[in-house]
Image 1 (tube, rainbow, N blue to C red):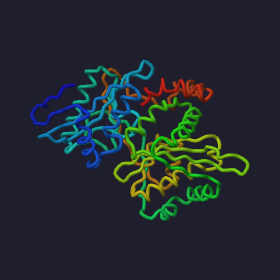
Image 2 (cartoon, rainbow, N blue to C red):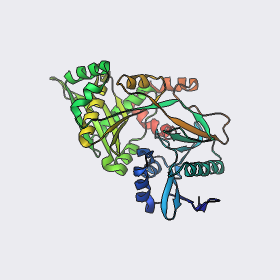
Image 3 (cartoon, rainbow, N blue to C red):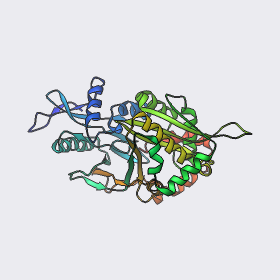
Length: 358
């Protein structure tokens, strides 16, 4: 898409290039509704990992960025053809200096969706929009403030969940938190085990390598192991965390069969909270969950209140809103079969499917 001037304004809509990465990210970081998932690095990660076409649009006025909208085209014979802001991310949509500029970027996205002849355009907003697009509310996000004193974190957690964490603290668990690729192999083993058990295709290890490489110190990986007198340390739980503007987002997490009994995931999330607090983070983003699902109820048990997410759609060739949820009955057989796969097979085959499940 070439740069063009929109009627009745001096604003120009352009596509992101490497020369404007820094300006784009500076804008995202200073915008109240900017998020880790609006950063320019996602263009590199998604292009390198999945080879999807990216259309990261920005509005420019007098040489300054005044709005951004990251978009990615995801095309699959199995799962449909969509233009999404942003796949593999829980937040997205346009952010801009004014609501009018936000709507202008949205309109540009609608035109692009029609030009590409996709099934639908999907914009994943955190806040409700004054938009004419179709709205779907199936998910909520959770979060809480992090105090400067990490010793204040545990008392602030809801009583029942606090008891679980206290129990986990008595187990002989180790906590390793590292940036770079040091914990990547253990993390991938645990995450792919968890995904297989859920019946969900795992992403390629290359994707996670790209996340670590592109985002650098804004990504780290926590790994929990259980210790025993008679055995070497055993893997239990792991999570990849994202950092943005004094926020921490434990984003990709999983564990193996011993995690539940050891409460190692509860231990892990608590330790991530404490570590993030010491690093200066003041907000813990516990991420998106489908409304009234198991993870939704789990996060409420921590004392966090759900905040609805607003996903907006423009239907092009589709006649109804998409439903790629694992709760969709048409995926029940597939999920059941996937859960029975040997782990190694799921690690080999999974990436061929997961790249379309953004």
